Image (tube, rainbow, N blue to C red; front, side):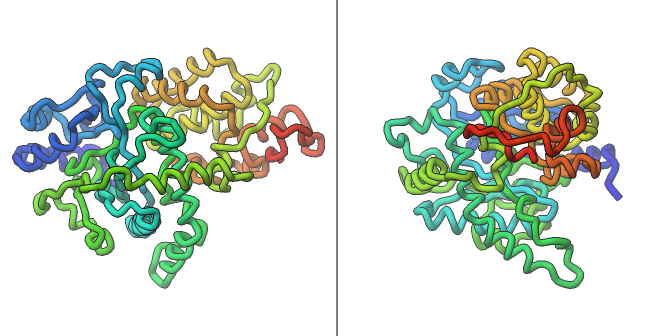
Length: 433
């Protein structure tokens, strides 16, 4: 039975003052915060943005005001306090001095995440990156970091500094696709009596979350507490990762280590070049990422009202508690693909966000809109993907028969299945059926 929220909050608030009063914890958070946007979380909601730490003691001052955890940006800024919500991309590039490659691994089970993390490290090592930071996320996953120092500063005349989040997404896709087969095999080996593996198609549950690779995305800082578990986001060595148990993250027993590895200048160059070549050379994008990368011709629907929306979309629009970023990804791609006006999309998304508990930050929605409109519209994820069940939405059988929300509208309201024919040009509509 899930623990009541009030009990979780009471549990973590009992230890925050004792834990964050430690000078070594304050120092660890402050040292990692340099050149980063830092935002405290007050159990359920985040503090104001932008913000940063000026002194180690700022940590405890925020805790005394109710802060329970600390989160920071992947991007490195000349002055984090000059960032503004809704800032134009060219101004963001002027302020950005670099970025770390952060791989965020999460799953229903810590054992799945552990296997995924080890395989990703093995692959990255193969491409010459020997220095990788590893830390426990605080819940059921891990964060891997390849520092800005390791990244190539430019490739083919293009400055890496200006290619966030595009190149971060591509490298993450490349890594994910490269390990998928072995990941499925190793997770399937866990399927023994009294184990919890129910099927072999579980790799997507531990794949790095591409939706979160976005401008000003925040991740939990090393040695921050986690509100739901009251565990600390501890730094691990590779050997410690292999043998990791949740009890190792007891905030009262940990010892401080540096999350940022002592990396070599440009050691990730081969990894980035391989990933970019792979991405450019794929005639057919990896199946895992087809929803994000294939191009289709959007359809202009006439007299389309919310009543004609698929049941799952209607359910999401009521507001949700968990998985709001995934839900935003679904809604944004759905609205764009049915050719809804940009102003109408923005209006609907902000109205929807007011119904969420708690709502997303307006800045996050703005950044996702900005990112989306720099790319051609793509289909929302198919119903059989984990996007829906992962946020508590169970598609109907009629929806499953239609594959995705756009096809549902076509079949339900406009055409019979046999009438939907693929277009002859390259931007065809064939995968809707």
